[in-house]
Amino acid sequence: MRSVLYAVLLLSTWVGLGCAAHRSDLEIPDREAIYDRPLDEMWPEVREFFTRNKLPFREDRGSQVLETEWRQEFGGSKVAGFFHRYLVVGRKETPTSSKLQIFRITKSQNKALQNPGVQLDWGVSRSLRANEGTLPANAPGESALLTSTEDWEEVIATPRGENAFFAESGQAQRDLLMEWRVFREVAPKLAKEENAPKQVQVAKAPTAKDAPSQMAIECGLPIIGLGKKAKPGTVMMLGELHGTQEVPRFVAQTSCQVTVAGTPVTVGLEIPLENQGRVDAFLDSQGEEGDWLKLMESPFWRSPYPDGRGSEAMANMLEQLRQLRSQGLDVDVVVFDHPKANGQQREDAMAATLVHQVESAPKRFYVVLSGNIHSRTKKGLPWNKDHRPMGLLLKEKLDDVVALDMAYDSGTAWICSVDSQGKRDRLDCGVRETKGKNNGERYFVHTWDSVNSEGYHGVFYVGSVNASAPAIRVGDSGPGKEGSKSLFGPETGKVASSR
Image (tube, rainbow, N blue to C red; front, side, top):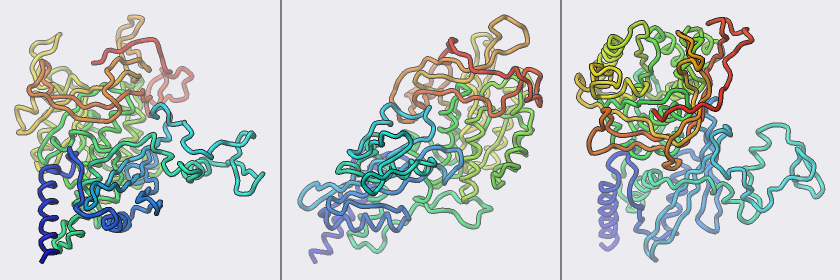
């Protein structure tokens, strides 16, 4: 009788906390999950969770600590460059209760995006030999030549010394969302509840035979505040400063996290409408060299004045979305720009394209990326009081539209501006310094109580920004003349506004 009552109390506690702290599978909880069992009883089920979800790990068996193997974002994308692992630590809360602390550890092959301090030597036995290019071998006095990046990665990932198990902890971030995912599956099993909750099903593409489990895809550190906005039928407009590495990654991570949480996603890109066929073909391709060439044959990618929309980071984002789609996730892309139209006609045409898409598939979540002039939801610009931006037109036609302006820390961006020498009909393109405000390293979405004067409901924050050069560098001779010696090169010393 006592054991039955105990199970009921445990399940009640789990349900109560789960409802309060986990309204959505994307919404980050605001409290820790507490297991109403001693640590020694809870830990075997935790180990089983990671085994069952095919997250290989190694364990410090004497201290209830385990560390999973590295996984690359977006299911092994060739261009993601970000790797993550979990450090899971069991903690005694009281003699009869316990908790988990889970840290997501991140490393990047892209040194431009690395945080300060990642080169620090966290282990006690990691120093190289005096000879450059060698590393300590197993036998005394021996050394082996490092021949590839794989050799280096293996050495860095191998625990050495008494504190090497925590070697990567200097780059760790607490992951409360993952803690609650484990809790929701493990707590009912501890209570021996037969009706334990099933894993959240990912949004499976209609044409896919199979789709991965929720835990099989690595989407990066959860974006704070995203869960409150990512709902079927919602259009989330992102007004960006073109030409950064971070915004395309934000879009790719958003798409991955929302789709894995069960909602299909369509990404809207400010790319000319005639590119839709090429984009569709690429998303359904194997991502081979020939597939890339077909995508990049478009004049859009070969403009002599690349404004950031055709950056390397944007091309990489398409590859990341293709990777998700290839695994059976319901991710799609729609392009909506009408560059042959001007002024208000262009805004009208872009809005009409997106309205048609949303009305055709109202149960999807839409992430629409554009320059931050187009995404405003209020009438008027400083130079044209009658201007009706695309964002305003969408808000008038659709039920659930939220416009977010870009927020970022200072850095650089690839920007096209009016020629510095005053030449007419010519843009000056290159790397510019940007001035922003430091709000930390975590990506987040934040909305205000009311819209601001430009019609924005809030901001999306991407940390410090780094310029992303054009995917294809074209010479002054024009598109298709890549052999020209006069290529656009990085330019410094000019400051772009935070707008």
